[in-house]
Image 1 (tube, rainbow, N blue to C red):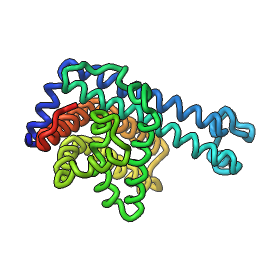
Image 2: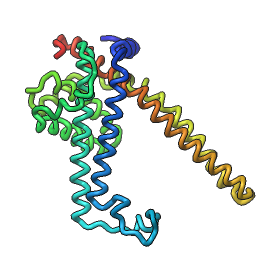
Image 3: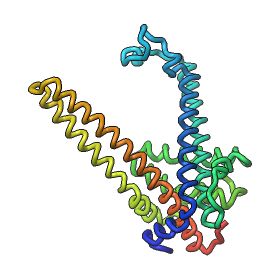
Image 4: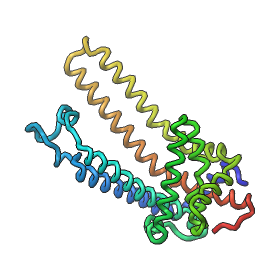
Length: 275
């Protein structure tokens, strides 16, 4: 099996010519999620357009926290949120399938996002729901068992792509079997990408120190100095969010491609043919 460094290098090679489409797919998923979340807020009365205001053009904190939702609205919110999570999860699954096709020489396309909806949709939803159920169940114990379970099931979507006729429970069991002794290896692979996000985290920490200094010295500062510090704080926060967003589009296509290569290496190690 290739080392993690070799897996990252191989993933970068496969992404050549596909990186632009990988970013476009991420944007499409983000837009779809935003639109669906907006629909939920409108249907459940959480939209600013449907809020019962106290005369303000926009809701203030008092009006937001004083709002009361009926049991029906709460139930509707939960049900719709689950539906949206399954829809977005299906699109993300299709995105992962695209990286497997990429390894076989098929270019990434936006059509990959719709593949899980084209056939056996019930099985697609079943695979997603069972993964979420097991991870949440294990997370109830402690966060660490939840993470361990998440990595044990990390190959489920890939296995489903290669074995569409396999039973849902068997797909998850196969992932757990493949990941025996490899969970830490995949975690370390992900970690090499996640460490990049420490850049905005460090910036956020800097913001926290700045905010503390600002309020600690508020009693002795004039209004102009406080305004300057507030503007600086807002600017740093916006910069941190912008950096995080940019890094996501840089890091995630590489990480997902690396995971696809990792899966192909697992199949080679198990002496199986790549679907």
